Image (cartoon, rainbow, N blue to C red):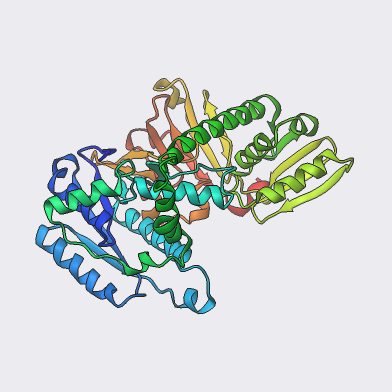
Length: 429
């Protein structure tokens, strides 16, 4: 098992009662108990099988006997079944929405899932043969950042055979989901039929998919590097927070680098870029044409337009993410929807202050000496989700947070910093 956490961290493990997650839970509770501060278990009751109630009760008893806090959540997939949508997709979306909520409520640090190497091979195979290869990794990452916590897969280099061997060695109870045997689901067909058939051929090795994933990841890194260099040397941002891309230079890029440039820039307005590869290709044709001006796409968050010799990506409203600022003198500074007044006394203590938006891992020091995540601070203060990305965070050169919008100010310096929310009348001030 790969260990990502520290002894002071709160771990949450997602357990389905299948052999993989029960082995992970057993390892954490029996062999890794001294590597973390707290262990909590989450279980999703999908309500689709007769055995679901029995599995939830089994896990409840298992955790009670071992003193492991357990939270069970029942999904309502009635609409999904009635409309014929993908149960696996909708269930995953709902699961992780609940996981996100629980991780915030528990103020936990890591969410662990029991994905293993065989799952990785299945994922790579699925993404290759469904065409999901151009803009994201072929496989799952061992660790990924989510909103306020880290999602990790500590068994990702462990094979299914190793998991079953461990289960037999320690006689770990588990439930087998009979729906996993149905090849009606694409991933089940890959797992149960296609990959075993390939592996049975002495000239073929499914583990070569792991090498393909590594090669693909390196290619994506090079594409990202070229995109970053292009943005640094050619793309400008004006005072209206609009990205200005020179059309001629952009047209000279390779197609995948173009897509990455656009993903990065649109990503400033939306975490998940909702533009397909086919749509991008249509944009590229228009950019290469003689058209002088053209509306490519407008959403409620951003606009993309051809404007003569430029491609312009702009916020659809005035509420785009403010650009970071460095302050070295006293005065009044506008940061998005906030007016920040800094007294000269502050610069007797610090040569410069930095004003930016929140970052993953940000923590503030409370009056009692304890620390709190900025994300948790905003949740406790009931800051709307849309406003969290706009709120100013004021830090020192060393990264110490002195203020977070109107939510928090460090006691030592609160008389020297005043932050005012200007509301919807900001353009009239």
